[in-house]
Image (cartoon, rainbow, N blue to C red; front, top):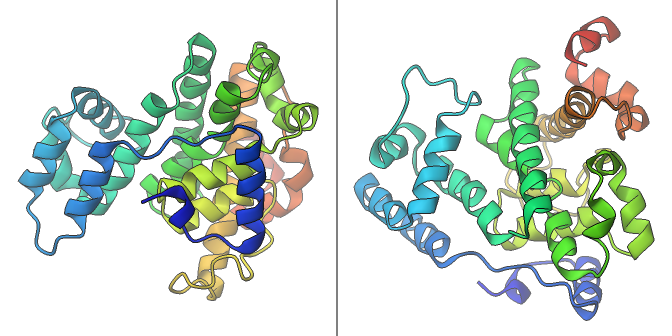
Length: 285
């Protein structure tokens, strides 16, 4: 699917046009991912066919097995066979994790971005762990995808905007990415959201990425999503945003010894959504 064919509101389409005029390009989905999506739309397809497609890409196979065997999934046994992984996960979850596995490869950009993707993977696991522990009501892979893609626009901008990558050399500055955006006149959150749309993430994940600084409700943004007008889905979206923000706070304190984050801007609402007290929060971060 061409990026331009992805359904965007007039406002988002205008923002995407402005980004393109600045020379910002979002890599299209890898061919193997499009093949996997195509197979997934075939009624009654066999898991062995899906596994065979994945095995054609050694890098994809290795990274998928790495994710499946991560603490997020807490499997009782290590999985070293792609077909076994597909059977355990199911086709839809396998597709989502293939997206996650291929993301880093598509947005490569040297040692600094390697550190960035290592960070994103840890934040993804933390987001899934918080969402699971606090019973947010979303699947582990949805939470993982949201955490992994939440700032992927940084990698796009680092490869497209002169000086943006250099401004990120000090990892401690990543706690305040909005400052980089203002300096270079860009919005990494919007770019991250567009990556999610163009890579066809679950629309709930894409919308949470767009509203990661504070969930205010989807409004007209995704009313076409089945069930999006229900209170239950709004609650899950708000819970996923709060889980991501807490994951960022935990990462910054554990790995950067920094209390700098956007957490304070949403502290009260996030604790309420997650059903956490200040005492419980202290055990997390």
